[in-house]
Image (cartoon, rainbow, N blue to C red; front, side, top):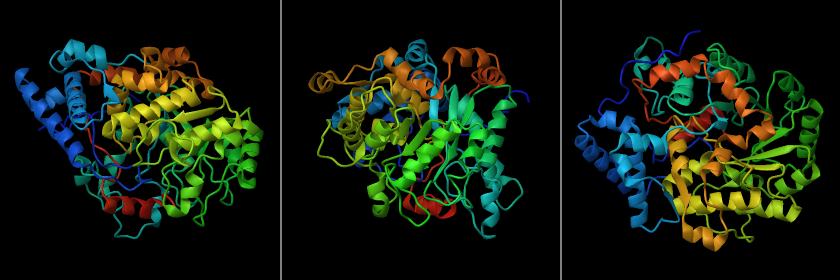
Length: 496
C-alpha cells in the first residue's frame, strides 16, 4: 500500500474549530460535563485572539489555526482565562511571542519526543455488531464527525464511513505526533463487542500494509466475571496481544469485581500462565452508582504486592470525572488519592509494578482546571513514580490526540505548588519519560529500534507530504450531550 490517501477538501474552511479542544466531549464512559461560564469564555477569548493574530499575520483564520502559532495562541488564551478566575496552579509555559512568530511556536510546540500512546480506541463502524441492529437504527449518527463528505454516498449508514480505519490512521499518525499506539477495548458482552480482536487485527493491518512496524499494538479484552473470557486468554495471547484490558466495574449482570476477589486472582494467574504479564485495569470513571464501589482502586496495592512479576497499568489513574484534585488526602476513598493510599498501605514502592495511565484524566483536567491537573500530575509523579506515569489519550473519542500532546508538551506546575507539596518540575526529560519512554519498560520495547524501523516507512513519508498542506478536522468523535451519551451506551453496551 502506498502513502495514506488524504482528502483535499478542507474540513473546516472557515476556521470555526480551535486546535485545542475545550468542550464537553466524553469517551462514552461518563456523562458529558457541560462547560461553565468561565470555560465558555476561555473558548471565546481564544477565538477572538485567533481572529486578531491571523489578521496581523495576513493569513486566513483557518491557516492560522492549523499552524503552530494557532495552537500557541489558543493555549495562551486559555492561560489568561484560567488566571482570571484563579486557576493558576498549573499553566501552559509558552512564550507570548509564539502566537505571532512561527519559528518560535514550532520550537516550543513541535515534535521533540518519542510518543507512545498506550490507550487508543477504534470502534469498527461496519463490524459484526451492526448486523444485529434494527433496520432503522442510526448508531453514532449524532457524533460530531459523522457528517463528513463520505456521509453523502449511497447507503443507509454511509455516514459510518466517516469513522473508518483510514480516518483513524489520519487522526493518529498524520494529524498528531504519535509514533505508536496501543489499540484498547471497551467493556461489552462477547456478542456485542464494538471492536472484536479480529477486527482490531484488520485495523492493525492498515498500518502494517503501509510498511509501518509496531506502529499499532493490541490489547485483549478480558472480563473475568463473564463466562468464556478467561478461557479465551490463551487464544488472545497467541494472537500477539501485549496486555489484557479489564474493567473491574463492569459485569454482564451489572456487578463488578475486585482484583483481589477469587475471579480477579484467577485472572492474574491465567495471565501469568499464558505469558502476558501486563494487565490494564480501568479505574475511576464509574459507570453509575451501582458500579461505583468496584471503580475504586483499593485493590490495586494488594494485588500488585501479591504478584510482583506482573505489571498493573491503571487506566485514567483512578480519577473520578468532575472531581477537583488537591494535595494528597488519605481520607479520600476514591479517585487518584485512593490509588495512592492503596499502594502506600501495601508497601508498593514508586517506580515498581504499578503504573498510572493518564487517559481521560489528563484531557479533562488540563483543559478545564490546570490547578487540579497540577495536583494530579504532581501526586502521580511523587507517589506512583516519575518512571511509571504513562501517556494515554483515549483517542479517537477525542479526535486527534495532537491537542493533548501540545498541552502536555507545554504544561508546568506552578512554583508555589511545587514548593508546598514537593511536586517535581516538569522538565523536558520528565516529559519524554511520560510521552513514551516509561511505557517501553512494561511493553519491552526499544525506542531506538522503533525509530529505526519507522523513520522511513510509508507513515513517515506520508507525514512529510501531509505537512505541506495539513487538513486536521479539530473535531471529536465522542458524545457531547447526555442524549448522545445514552445512545452510545445503548448501541455499544458501554457499562452495565
